[in-house]
Each structure stands twice: as C-alpha cells, then as structure tokens.
Length: 238
Ligand code: FPP
Image (cartoon, rainbow, N blue to C red; front, side, top):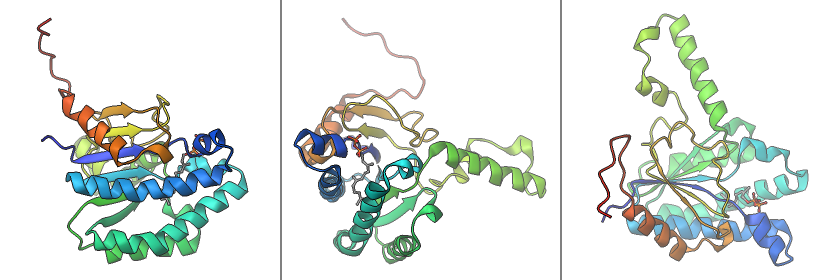
C-alpha cells in the first residue's frame, strides 16, 4: 500500500481560520488542538510509524504575549488531559526543539510523558516545541566541534551519519512526506536537513479544517508520487 513511514506536518492557519469566521485567534488554536488528536489517531490507523508536528517555533515567541501565554496553557492542558488517551493508543510521545525555553512546569510534563510512553510500540508522535532547524544544525556543529577539540573525533571522519546523530532527531528516520496546511509554499525553518528527499504536499485547508479525510488525501497523493532520491527520471510515455 506504500504508506509513508514518517510524516511531518507544518500546522498552519489557526489564526486565519478563526479570523475568517470572526472568532478570536485563540479559538483557532483550540480547534487546532482537536485536529492534533484526530491526526495522531488517523496516522496510527494508517500504520504510519512516525508523525512529527511543528507545534511551536522558536520565532513564535515573538507573537503577542497574550497569544503565547494562551498557547502555553493549551499545551499544558493537552499534556494533562489528552496524553492519557494517547498512551492508551500505544503512542510513544516524543519532543524536539529547544525545550529549555519552555516554562518549567511544561518541561516537567514533557519529560514525564516521554518516560511514561517510552515502552509503547505504536506510532512515535514527536512534537516540535521552540524549534528552529538552523539552531538545531548550529548546536550540532558546536557538539561536533567540541568532540574534535577533545580528540574524540577526527575532522575527516565527519560524515552525514555524524551530523544526523547530533541533531534533535537522532533517533528518527528522515520524513518521507511533509504536509503544510493553509497554502503557504515555505519550509519555515522546519527540519531543513531531514526533509532533503521528502515529498511535499501543500493544501489550501487551514489546520483546523485538516480532518482525517484531508489526511487521507495527503496519503493518496504520496502514493502516486515516484520517489527517485536523485536518480534519473524514466522517459514519459506521452
Ligand atoms: C499555526 O497557526 C499554528 C501554530 C502557531 C501553533 C500550532 C498549535 C496548534 C495546532 C494548537 C495546539 C497544539 C498542541 C500541541 C496542543 P497560525 O497562528 O500561525 O495561523 P495564521 O498563520 O493563520 O496566523
């Protein structure tokens, strides 16, 4: 059936969805939270093994304080209430990003759920919080440089595997499919190294409208793609 093993999603458009119907932006985030649950379930159902969700970027801290504070409360509520269900579904919770930027109580909850679900064998649901791909790569360079300085690593032995092993995503395979909602043709500093060969799927739907049916469409589109990983394209018959 050719199901992508790893699906990454840039969840965009909560604010615009809300504004379109004269609701406060935060209502869009609330409904967006419900979609997160629905898509985790749908991905498990399809047999996707890894789902990585861009929940909060490093740049998102620059939004109005009230919106940031609402998003942190929503996240805290999500961790308290929704993750119990996730655990029952055999989902393994994981987080990437500059987690130390988050409020202490949220950091504790994240650590708790990573620990609580670490023996689950179903979908790995990875949430990117305070995430920046450029920062991730910069930090990897710093770690590698320290190992070289300490004499643990030779510069000439550094290869792609070394870089991979020093990223936040060291335990994850590269995404096969990257979905972005709300029509924007941008990567927004998300998994820049890891998505080198991912198939891209952009939908006009805002994230609060991205239901399991929309997820199914993205999987179908992926199944029609021919992945070449840089090899020559065969001649078209037409
Ligand atoms: C994009 O909409 C979404 C975010 C900034 C955050 C993603 C958050 C959620 C999906 C809600 C809850 C998540 C968890 C994990 C509980 P936007 O505000 O950038 O929309 P806009 O581009 O229309 O302004």
